[in-house]
Image (tube, rainbow, N blue to C red):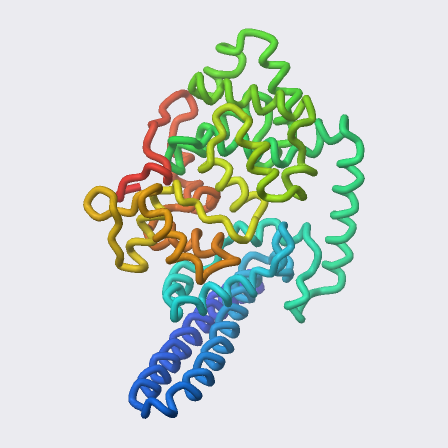
Length: 382
């Protein structure tokens, strides 16, 4: 018990030390900027370059400390490479340095996107992390080889390796719902095929299609709490996998344009759903979900800007060019800046189930699920 207490205490101290270090660096950056403003114009340019380099080094140290604290508290692998192959540390340093460091206070307040760490044990090490454990590398390589061998056998893949199918089912189940309600519906859909959030492997295209052979109303729609449109969407998605139009191999390794085109052919999957899939499940680095209302609200808060929408809000179509211009400095890591727009708006990001798990457990499984706006159409009280 004493060891457990010491470990917990050490974790909290590490996080607090990272926060104190960040505040100190922010003060140094602010002081340096004030010095530059007070200097003669001829000397300002050269000094400004030096200050920016120093700021970048400070931001990198801050990000690495936050990552180390998160890894210590979660006990997960030390690799910072995402499923799509890019380095999380490099991405965070880039977005934190862009726009004069506008996102640094947001990152300090809300922490790191935890869903990137949930899969860090299944990807190879990142070359930017010199603290990576060799044993973890061997384990990750073995895991990658195992997934590759599974994908070669289509029948086995249909039953055992339907990661993308389950991810898309979860997105469909959560459409037009707030976080707790979305998780409650997701659990009910899993229960229809005798699966759970921790053991979801029984949710496969074949299992859904077998339910579709009977009375869909009693075997799938009502037990899962799905609307008619969502039920049709899940069945159509399963048929796409059965025909081979969709697969883990295509969706994880295909080009983004190809993936978008393939997913938009499924009934009920629109641009917003595809953006959520690419951002959270494929972990593409440069997704900009213009159709997400909370994303646009966060942009207004961060940049203190007005759009052409109602009451000065940003409009998905009318202000598309403005949104792209504001987020261009964050490229090629706009997925990270998009995540922090949700944080600016104090809206729970779509895939952060750990933050809303407790709330969802209070919702009755027997149909006491309230339909409330999703982040896409959320109000300020979401």
